Amino acid sequence: MPTRKGAPEVFDLSGRHLSSLARSGAGPGEFGGNTVLAVGPGDSVAAYDPPNGRIQIFDPSLKFARGFRVGQPVLPGGLLWLSDGRFVLGGPLQTPEGIGYTIHVFDAGGVYRKSIGESRRPIGPRSSAYQGFRLLCALPNRQIVSVTVVGEYRLQVWDLETGRLEHDWIRDSPVFDHVEGPLGSRIVAMATDSAGRAWVMMSVLAPDWRKGVSEEVIGGVEHTFRIIDREGVLDTAVDVIDLEKGELFAADRFSRLLRGFIEGPGLATAWIPGSVQGTDLVAVSLRTNQR
Image (cartoon, rainbow, N blue to C red; front, side):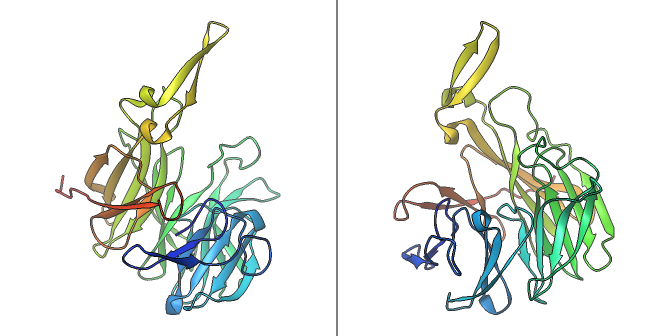
């Protein structure tokens, strides 16, 4: 399980805390915090360490094996470790030509090979904090599916070998955008199932979000909101999308802030910030009645 500060924590299947993956720090096998994890060939683990700008590899016994540096930031869900050993990262990378590339491929040795997902929208200091980030899932036949984190709710299927865009869908979701309120909607997780569907999880403004904020008026005109209870401000919405047709298969909404998916149909997990012993892992069922 990733943590906001320090090394990831290791739990057994019953939820009992076993150990930290490594120490906090900047040396080999150490972490600066806010780690992004991916499981790869042979049950090895790749961990992206944002403060130190690198990916570190741990063997199945969770001992440090090797590491390499990368040139762009990555959010949870934006790191893939493919069965052939390659790594795929979804994050903004600015080029001298002013073109942003949002999907990047590294070989099994950590050597950068290519970028795809061209975007001519500027990716720079004035951009949204999450602009250019993608969440990624692997599909059969060397394809990947990506979803944007903010802005347009956009799913794309890419041929990883040719860099060709196979499918491109913009989802007009009634819960994804809003005008009023202190926090914007954001896609926080994605997974794919054996039926070829994408499960997309969004944090969205709760109907009673004002209970979680205090409202202030500046100069008698401008309204600002100070967040008191983030968990009370945001709900979670989940879409299940047929990637063959680009159509909504099912949808549901939960009156709590969930964080991601666990492997298996119809399950999502919620990570509630707190101490290691107090961390809460919650499984909920998603209604999947076809629409």
